[in-house]
Length: 400
Image 1 (cartoon, rainbow, N blue to C red):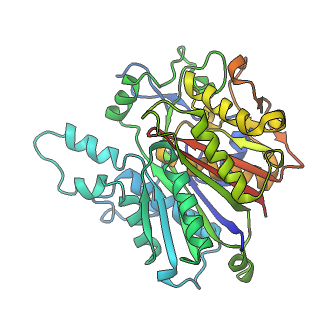
Image 2: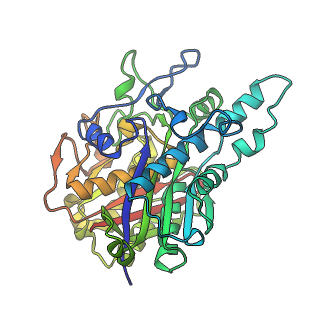
Image 3: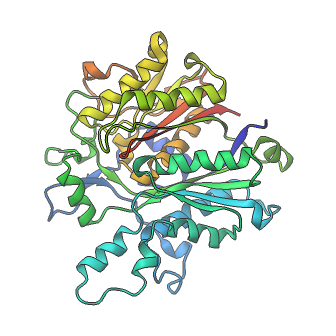
């Protein structure tokens, strides 16, 4: 069975819309997290650098298109361009697989706070499948166009489902990823009410998120979109496409224990499933882009899940959570971190686990604590996404 090749990468991220430049900024440990909404109790978030929607939309086209869909269209378009803008794909053989946790938050915010008149296009603007539909219309995709909403695992699941469709021969090419744009007051206040957002001292927002550290206090929201182009390795070779990496395994599981509290055995099942599909042993995998939300419970549970699977080989697995630098993109987190993981493999460099001065004894891992870390022998890497609702998704990539 032909491997699933990753032939295109596209991002609209807090570090910009050039995937390679974004990765270089992460390697330098440049944080995009800043204080936002001074009228609220000092939240921090990783908002986009100015996003020029006019590159993809006319003013007329923007009517009724929420920011979350704008970002999706842009990132998907960049991914397709990066894949060489293939023109030999029949429309019905092109699929779109998108993860989105909450849909058009800006449209909902405007409807709730806008007074007596609710904009007539509020419903199509905020529906969670709007990003996928807009991508499909822009790319003229007439194959399966599907939306997955499993909180923080949404876009990782979308990528796994796209790979299944490619491997099964249901599509020739899949545009897969996710989009999220939740930095609006109502959503920020809701996350603050859960006491999951990071606290920080004045002028210290950039280092507020400290995954696996003794003094971690939570995450910062991020916004953006990320997409990959997937096709069979045979198809990619026939059209002479560049192959960044191969998606050789994925694992999906559900904790089935608690809506918001993670569970190590459930995460371990997803990790083992990804390894089993890829035909690899834990010692074969050299890097993990951790879910690493910097919450008190979550980081310990993820460490325990990795330890239960890797066992005596745990020290050989290098680990980092890049959420310290780009924030938590929720429904788009898995896709953005998949792109980062693919680039780590492609360039054989490991992004740092920033701002962790003292590792929590309960989170002992071989963390990447230095910048510009080279990994000349890196051959396989995983990206973890563990969600509210108990959904766990693991993507396992190998060098092409």
